[in-house]
Image (tube, rainbow, N blue to C red; front, side, top):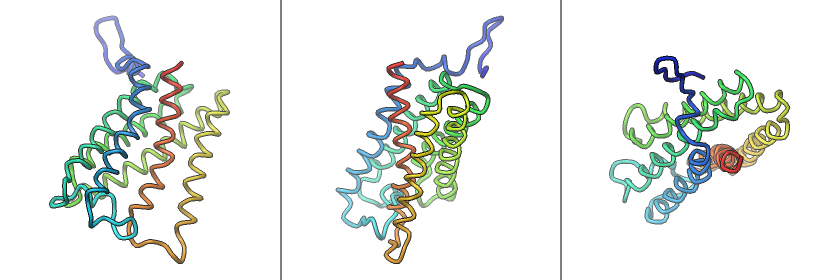
Length: 204
């Protein structure tokens, strides 16, 4: 995928971020984001998994809301660097489409931390983050499966299947009123994808 041109020279997007740096960012991004989210939960006495959404932690007036927003922004930026370097592992144009979706999802995640809960773009940015990331993973899984990387494609899809099953178990007679549990479940396959493929990129 061509991004920059300088005379006769062309720079591919994956060349912008070294694989080791991108892989390290992929491994670390979920720990940074959810580490700071966990701290936000611990210091916010009004937060409950059954009655709150994660975005409540970053809303104006929430105790130490900058910790949550900082975690989302930094985690998103690290995920973007990871996605840029992961273009090296695409097997086809299908994979490129999937990775573009994931990259766009990372951009939306950064914007979620900038446009907090009380702002108009927040909800649509959250929905776009989950939709683009999950959709990108499905397409990238197809790329890996069709291009003789079946084990990685199956891994991605089984990851998504686990999240769907988990969400189905939560959605029932005792379903919580808050969104936090659903948001965490929805992020599980994205976090695992980031750690697993970040590790693969770092060591390969």
